[in-house]
Image 1 (cartoon, rainbow, N blue to C red):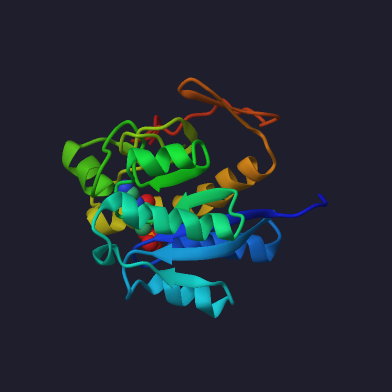
Image 2 (cartoon, protein in one colour):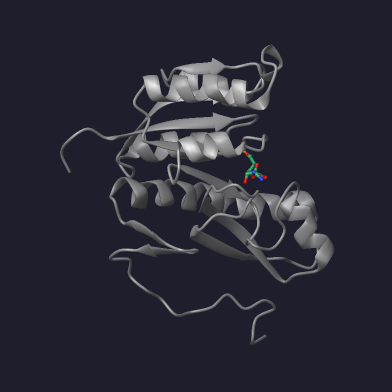
Length: 220
Ligand code: GAR
């Protein structure tokens, strides 16, 4: 592939392990993109340190410095545009985006959620799955629309919920796959292979498979 790589703006609030997975995929040559800027709404987010360690510009933009959500988002949007960002990746960004921001960057914002949407949107998707008693959960990368954890789905991974799971063990099992599917979703976007048709995202030239995750297993 030639040309300029897709520029990413990653929005974070915390630990930044998904940001790290994106950076690692780029450094390994598995993702044709470049992280142009990382923006946090929390000054002490570890994600900012991770970015700086890799020579990536990292900004804290304090929501408390602005009188409305839209004003805060306008500043974020301007910083992203200044750097020519083509895709905004929410990676543990714990703020709900306004219609203004979603509309300004229509179909150029994606999010990762730690559950198989539309099940268990919102906070603590892993705990919600455990409490509900599902046998399979997982994670979802989707385009962002006006409703929380709602836009067209790009990719999902399913993992079993085991008998003695607690929130932490299930979250860790899901997180391992978050780190695989998020860079993959970005790569599909970067390659221009995603086409949104209503709620469905068509993935061009993706090999299909037909096996299932069954939990508990059919045998044994
Ligand atoms: C991840 O598990 C992500 O799926 C979740 O926050 C965590 C951030 O971890 N996001 C949401 O729950 C959004 N509704 P990270 O900072 O280590 O990437």
